[in-house]
Image (cartoon, rainbow, N blue to C red; front, side, top):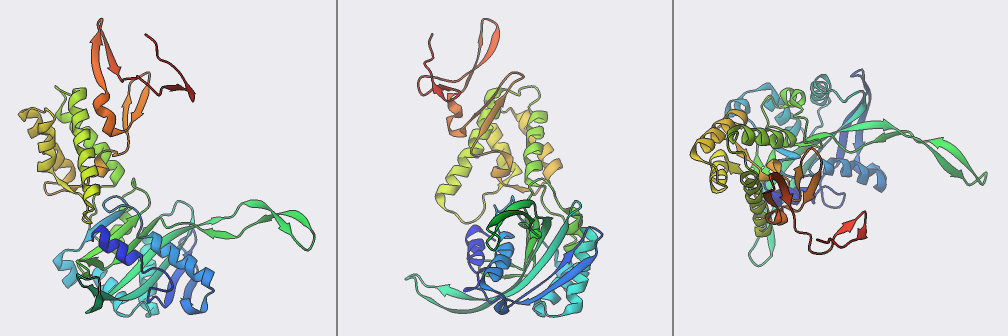
Length: 376
């Protein structure tokens, strides 16, 4: 799915737009026991309750593609005949109305998930979207395509804190404790995906709030497949690969140039408004290193290490490899953060035998928020 298709589905997840008629789920305690079930008609809930449920489901489609939203690909063999794909397809075909299928799916999740000593809610919904065809003149007509999909999310449930509350009958404030509060989802998925504005049963879209945890237990149980390395680990691994490959010539200027080029690609892609996510191959990353001044031996080593860590056919998002909004320069004594667009102002010099990082300070210098003049 690209960003445009994702936004199209996200816009549906609200009472007046979606065809979601029923909500299903269960409340699970830390002993992996189901405390209660959700089997609610959306039309019978209050407007506020319905909006809150849909808001939780909608959040499982939030974040950046390739970072919080990860593509899950099923092998052809899985689609043709596998327990995991058969269960997801049956849930979709029955529109979640089969209680035995739901129970099997709940147990599949419960047995595989560790929510760190927290109770949690499994919430699910089915929607059918009559996909419109958009004409060049802005007109819409029925395309004949109906996209039927499942949304599922896992939300921690936390105990409320004691607060002061006003009691009108007594005209006094009293200490009161709110009940169990449902937090934003930590995990979720969409199945099948909406690729090229059509149904793709070969893919699912996984949501993870954390960019550190790969949630492999959940993925093994529900999808039985591998997912890309978590975004935070991608950045750490990319840094390690650069360090290993440039061990002999690990200069400030080379690393600076690599991050400048990655940041520039992110900026240009954003300005182009291309809905498809920006992804680079190992070969393309090697070309960036070459333009940054890396030698042939270093480039060869870099590509080899990248293939070992990420896979020969890996497609990596530059936004996972560097921060497009901040560049950090650290030594044992200091830490400097600046906009990557201004990294060209940073110089390194050796003065009287000592190494220095130099940044122009011609104007606008402040010390603890107080404007100061930098003298000779």
